[in-house]
Figure 1 (spheres, rainbow, N blue to C red):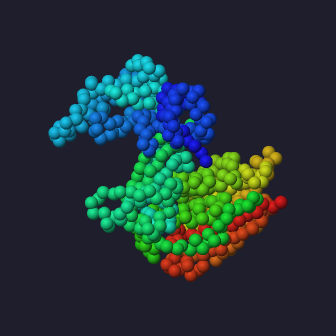
Figure 2 (cartoon, rainbow, N blue to C red):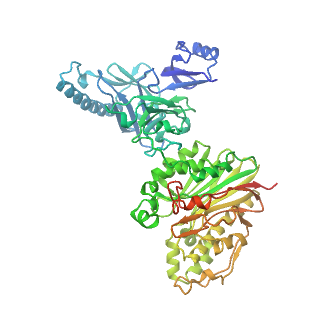
Figure 3 (tube, one colour):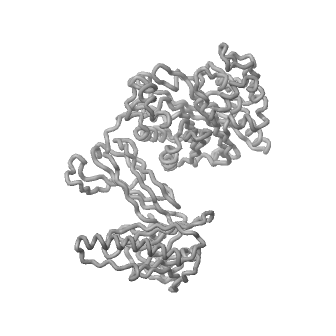
Length: 624
């Protein structure tokens, strides 16, 4: 069991941190002397020492946080001030590092003057008795080691750890780059049996270091007539899964930011939900698939998931609601509804590698990255070219892999800029119209080099892409996959030339069914110049073609299911996990949902399927 000693900030030095002794969890008083403090820590077997930045439980400290980054010309000063029982207010100043302290204090005095005069006016209107002093009666100064700093001291030298801001009789201890939560949000869509993840914007901490407490309103919204909410503590876990008992109730969360490396605790921040917990869709077909992935993989095995999750960029439009997916209720197309389903589905696969396509930048940053990090994943996002805010994302389990390098490319750019693709550029120059189409595409290839932590000395090249979608554009996809494979071959040769072992897993939405050229090229290693897909039935986009070859031996990890994409009027196998069959065997393939489940609500997406694609999942086993 850990025993934590909670210390306030002051002028005593302990392990290169400034501390003034307070009390420990056993409520024994600690002397401020370092020797006595060390003896206390030893006697009580204290395992962790925290420096408190702000209010925590029943302890109250006045603190001021300074954000000071090496590459920034300014520093940010933040603190909360309350005077004579008036409502507290946050004061934030952003000042140049080289500005003199006197100038910053002058600005602070002006800000406080406006605040106090405004409060003074309100008190006067209410005939209140407490007196609000003028700013001149509230001397403001900065001190260090019992000496007041000169107004000519540069900010960067004044606002350092150990300094104190004095405002009247209040003292604010300066802490530099302390952990802080700037924004805390509970998602608007909360459903029974679907995990609720908080969204937060923080500094000098992350969600894995924070202490989170969940509360439920004691009354349902429908029963709360006076609008005053009382709260009941429900959970101290980072993620909360509402139960049937939570239906109709609002939730509240409290987050205390911490920085474990520096032994710092920041100011607690709370947030209330904007809506109540709803029933949700109930049981989803992906939960049946979870029965095959209950356990994490053993050593030398890798569970791989590839999944086009349907970007909000494409689903949130009248065209999508009325033309593409008219059978799907509008609320079920909303990203706020789909995100909890996606997170529950993806985390339940207990994967080691996850390759996603159509990933919105906002969904990656606010949901996927922070939430999957709680399950031990590190994530990378590669956006499409131009201003398109969606792309491909690769997540890997940090207990299985370590990131070595990234080699992401924009296909159209590398065709024009890299001499290795001169043959492809020459081919395109034979048809100016086709060349224009290919070079305007925003398609990317995400390539991550990982080091296996199970198999010593083994690297894994993980590629992820989403090829052009247009049904009759087979020749464009042939060109795109040729570029992808040429790039992969170059990377593999580069690492092999250094004497390193490296193999390949290539995932994605290839927008091509098994009988077409993309799959044939990947699995056979060649496409002839006279292959039928170079010529599109007399289309102006037809070209003479070229011989395509690659030296890798690849197979489809999930075989060839009947479909991986199912929308109204169309279904096909478009998603693949291609793997190096000289290095891997397929150990397991997770079955697809039953066809009756897929068509129960006409097609995908639906209230129980968060995407129009179905995740492909297989477990690969390293060959000995």
